Length: 367
Image (cartoon, rainbow, N blue to C red; front, side):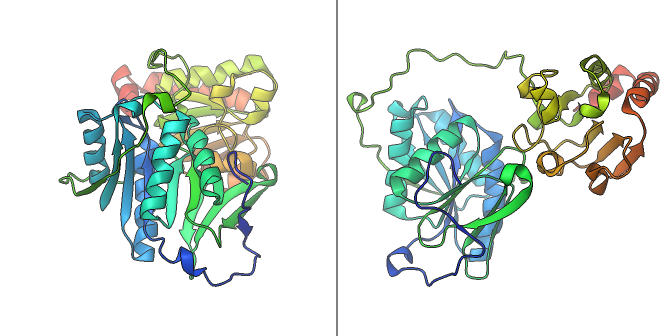
């Protein structure tokens, strides 16, 4: 049901709706927690501001960005960016104790803000940090949290309708948190489209004190080791992705995926079964339990396209599917389908692209 929270349970669509209790009617507006690390905001925060804008407009309320961080110019720059991506106002908790993420200090900052200003909806990115923080905040506030959502909307009565895969990804379930506030949801990066950035001046900023000293926080940060040089994939933000599935037949044939990706200047990935078999590392997995991608071009070779995979790729601008099974589910949502053996077709595609694309053209395709 949620990240690290079990009570109260979020209600399913079939639940009977009741009038909102009087003490919850004071909860208004849509909030987005802006995740940032040393002044660098995570792109999922801007994606959520775009989604939050739609919800706020439907409800006729304000869209607010919540920024928590050190008291410095970098944090102020993040606040400015939040207005450029659509925020009507910002709530800021700035304290040098918040320079690095620690669950205890960030949970206090966010729960204090909620208790003081009472948002109706609170959205966070389903990142490593966001999942950890969302679970703690929801548990502390005793409210419902719907995790890893693929769609957000509000119904005729103004309740948040949060849709997410369930039963192992075989169904999509829309969940309501009817009698608790705020209504919380996490959304993975790249699920929502990135809104257009429009340069704006900083608007109304409401500052709130943290109210902690270092001795109040059990966890201590001994060192900060950036992972910018990590060799892990950057699938979520790649413009071209080539992926393979069980239809490749053997781990040796996955090299065909890597070769095509190299020619196109693309990232490469795979479906879940290939990770389970140990053919490919888990950071390359695409789908419900892997990465969500929104590339300009997605080439899926030997992937059947079950719902677990579909929810991770259907935001792509153009999907090319290659499969021997003409009834494969992937052909239901691919823009172009090729009924063929991927093992035979991929070398031909690689050769054709290699001849037609100059290094400059490959760089443009991947940029």
